[in-house]
Figure 1 (spheres, rainbow, N blue to C red):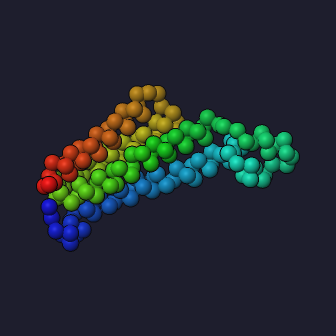
Figure 2 (figure 1 turned 180 degrees about the vertical axis):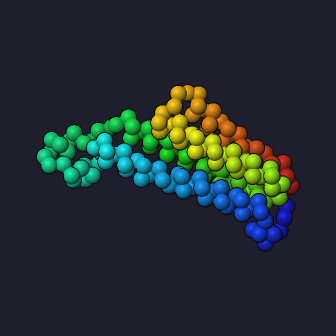
Figure 3 (figure 1 turned 120 degrees about the vertical axis):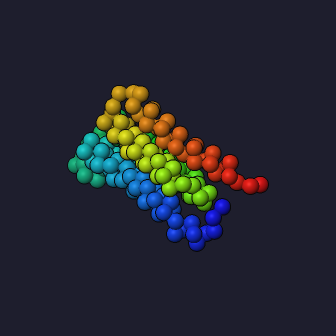
Length: 154
């Protein structure tokens, strides 16, 4: 393992911080996307969110489940389930002192797979496109996890 100051200054850590920031920002943008779909579909989960309605009947009509809103919400949930482990495992991976080209491959594959996963989920594209994107991203994360576990000395 490298010493902490050299890890923070390393090109691998700088690359990781860039790619981790990209996917975290992408995940954060899913909330405004959900809001956009809610407003354009006039579909809300809570009565207090229906303030734009003119009548009580209109308010009740706005309290419903919309398939497009739910699709974006599930995509966001999937991001939470995959991006958080990538950030944690990726940080530990940078501490193992991997080769820059190998680390960049892991980080880029994960980021591209998550971006494609979002496009495939929200549009939607036919399966197995979304499933393959998910598997590729998980593969990159598991590969980094294997490196972490195989270089750790107990």
